[in-house]
Image (cartoon, rainbow, N blue to C red):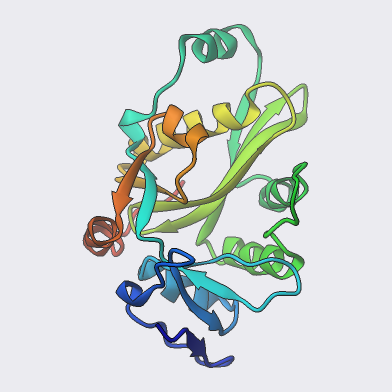
Length: 223
């Protein structure tokens, strides 16, 4: 395939079905991270993912990792942990702190949450499209998750933990909030064992895009 080079000012995304098989899901390069560009991408099932100093890369993998909020698996040990520990949950109270914490997680490789990405998603949060959920203990931020609300689909970007079970608690309460607001699906983008162990499931691109098309224009208030 020929990789689509996007216009830096007015990018137009190709059909996700044109994404590469190797590396799986790579669709286009270039464009920009302006709010309208990002929202257009997410409405089409496309997301940016690239390392510092690389060009902007856009992806739509052949197999998506998704969680149906009511199907989240919570272990007995996690239930016990949450029952015996005093923590509090907030929504959209510390978006900047959450995304910076996600970017600064210990990792063996360079983070994909670059300064450019941080600035772009903070801008989306000020516009009411990107959201965060925070877990606090003793006034300390111990976990959190952030992403975008696209209709009644929540596109999760990243989560972090600074204490035992911090990210798992964030994921649990995110799903509880989604159930309360009647969100249909949590898009986790890439399949990994940790999420599968918590009830995530792989979904073929065409199935995901069909669900996205059905629910992306639902006007649901996040809070």
